[in-house]
Image (tube, rainbow over all chains, first blue to last red; front, top):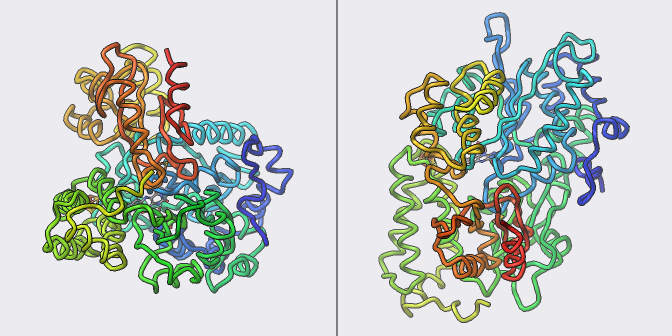
Length: 428
Length: 153
Ligand SMILES: Cc1cc2nc3c(=O)[nH]c(=O)nc-3n(C[C@H](O)[C@H](O)[C@H](O)COP(=O)(O)O)c2cc1C
Ligand code: SF4
Ligand code: FES
């Protein structure tokens, strides 16, 4: 089984420096692109590979790049932005990629920037990742020192600057248009769409925002080709995926596996199964803002379409396991507390709806719930659904809620009829 | 504004086509030197970036890690997001509150510690986690917390 993204990552050891990365074949894709390929050919290669965004939404990367206006009257200034905000609760994969092999990411950024003819790239890094910051600063400095960044890279007449921006901590900054406002130094609320960033982005110029893991795939696609990349997956999606598991399992962690690996294999084999004394009850498969999957879904291959057909989302591919001794309502309450706190407050349904949801869940959990609360929660889930808010934050926020109402209906009812949480005595 | 602070801000300005872009960086720079961002600091940033103080404050108040009030020497941010919650961050918070004798959002009377919640630190496979200053600590237990706190001046 091939693991192109992680094969040179050795946790606990320093990441490969520029010389080591080059010895491992690093920057050959960049060399090849700059000397043998036009930017359009790079876009075509990525399009052919069927690479989809790994930051949550799964949008095809090559297609997005081809939306950047080209031609003589197109804006000359374009930007490439690497989204390294990674604040989705339960998600810790981008940090592993950055700290484990920073040059792989930088090469991906350079290839993507070349493809859209951007001369400036920004990495938007969350504030708390101070190790990632150090690693990236050192790696970028190495590139400038070797003239692999700056003017006339590898004698190709292509110029590129990469600048690292560290944020100051706010989940909504990961939403790509909020991120652009954040980079511009404005209050980081999302922008109305359309226009979309590939046309009107950073300072009004065409901008591509791409997740860390997505960009890390690009050098390998250029090196080995689209067919090879497609073949990495177990289903008709392409590539590998960094899957992660946290919660009460024996070996929480991350694994690079073929896209389309089953939920059962990930939890039982790679994560070692549940801790002794705990049973699997459900999982949110792709970070906090995805719908629960339950036992009946264990044999589903985790790829974009299959997870969507099961009513959830692959999201970030880093899952949080619910065990049988943890109260599902309390779990959803924790998630909605997070969302209520992190809502940017720009639009009313989200700003007012989430605290209401949070308080209702809190009442149910504490045995103060009434029967009509269930309807209320259903109603809120609809009110915050897709198309009613400025950004995808609110629809994401109600995903775990709406699926909990479906799969854990008995738990909700028991809390209300017994006026207490039946799990309280189970918690250690 | 000290020459050092000014120089660091100027250095950031050179990386962007517009001055305003460094608003967050400038706030972080002043906070690094002064511990927190006072009304005075907001005004200074506004002046150097040619923004209005209220624009700068709308940015300053947006972020979890810009402190608009004085803090203790060490700010302890305990992750209370989902994976840490499943793994028992509730008892970690209780332990910290009891040991420090303060609630979330408060500073110890000796000015040593401030206790704040924070969202997922990206250490979910090593939950529960917390960040003290710039360092993330993982797989927390009351014992490891006590050992850690003792080492901090
Ligand atoms: C509330 C919210 C938070 C997000 N946070 C992140 C994030 O931290 N990192 C990320 O890569 N994408 C995040 N996204 C998705 C981005 O908006 C965007 O789709 C993504 O960066 C595009 O890159 P990709 O296609 O490579 O995934 C978030 C979206 C929403 C609605
Ligand atoms: S949905 Fe929520 S996070 Fe998104 S713009 Fe509206 S208030 Fe802000
Ligand atoms: S949930 Fe606490 S570190 Fe991710």
